[in-house]
Every structure is written in C-alpha cells, then in structure tokens.
Image (cartoon, rainbow, N blue to C red; front, top):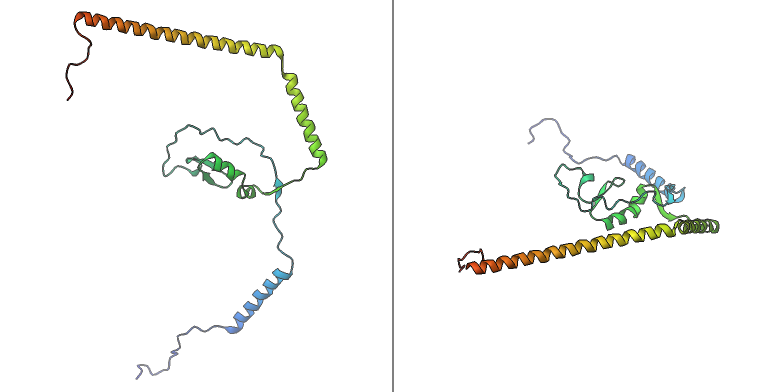
Length: 199
C-alpha cells in the first residue's frame, strides 16, 4: 500500500501547451514566406576597389632579431601584422596576398569589383604618362651625366689602388715569413711548434 492517504500526480512527463507552439510555428512560417516572396534583404553597399594610397612596408623588419615572450603583444610577434584584420602573417608573400585578398578588402569596406574606365579617362592617363616621360627627358643633363661618370671612374681607380696596396702588403708579409723561416733553419730549429707527437 501507499504510504500517503492523499492521491499524488504520478505522471512525471512534461506537459506542452500545443496551442502556444502551434501559434509560434505559424508565425515562423509566415516570416519565412515573407522572406521568400517579399522584398529581399538589402545587400551591403561597398565601394569599388581603389588604389592603395601608401607604400607597403615589407623591409623594415628585414634582418632584425626580436625576442618574443608569452606577454608580447600580437602586433609585435614575428611576421607581418595587419591591424585592420587583427592577424599576423608569417612571410611577405602571404602578407601581400592577404592585403590584396577579399577578407581584407571587405574589412576596408570595398568590394572586389573595379570601376570600368571610360575612353576619356584612358586618354587622360596616357597624356599624364606622356608628360612624365617628357619631363624625365628634360631633366637629363649631359654635363651632370659626365660629372657622374667621372666620379664613378675615380671610385674605380681608388678601389684598384687600394687592392694594389693590399696585394703589395700581402707579398711583403710572405717575404718576411720566408726570411724568418730561413733564419730559424740556420739556428737549428725548423719552427716554434711543439715536438710532441699525437698518437
């Protein structure tokens, strides 16, 4: 027999409110239908791809040694740090791939699409480049070029003289070594090395 006189609810199963969940399901289905048949979500408007306005610094850390500990900030770890994406790339090729890649450009707010140039823009670009080439030709000065050539010749002559002096010094050292060797032979010993034999 049961120990209690009152009747207890012996059903331990959880009871669900079917009407409430039916309403939630209908609401969810209605929202799904609106998404399919209604207005689609507005895509994010991104700028067209643009030229970089700065020079990428790949050589500042070249040949330098850095001591890295557990507490070293990520931006000072070994490799190239991208502060826009907050990531470290281990070598220069992968860093260039990263900054030219889709993820980095999206974080900058640009799409990977390039603006189509018109005929007038192309003509203007050709004119600008043509003017630059003409300015370079004007800057070329014959007298200045001759001066540079003379300086280069003087540097070459100075280098040759230095090499001749070095060679002459080397020959003199060799002669003094031979004279010392002959003097040692006359005195009865062949050198200043040990007479111990290594077994």
